[in-house]
Length: 145
Image (cartoon, rainbow, N blue to C red):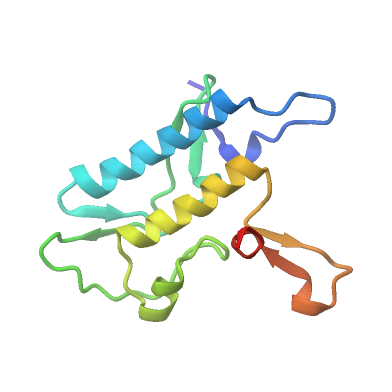
């Protein structure tokens, strides 16, 4: 089985973009993977770095959540784990930055940003070197607002 990262599934010039059915299959596959980690594992597994680069695709564009290097297991009864904030800028939930407490909600935020990337074809943070204000960065979630 050949697996590629979602972010590496870039379409080259003069090739058609991924159709909506394929995009939906990718989005649903990633959602199912997170749902499994959050609802069917005991203890729950919080990924902490949900992003396109961590969504792996097979030859049929079936999605699998991968790269568990930052993942934490959280006891369902005690969700008071405080950690150093880790993850990828643009995908980290504001409440996680503020409290240092990872939760299912922090993964859902990262998934939401990834979903926006799938739908819009834009990256979570776009760099524009000719922009002086905002250090040349525009976050996708700010554009959506």
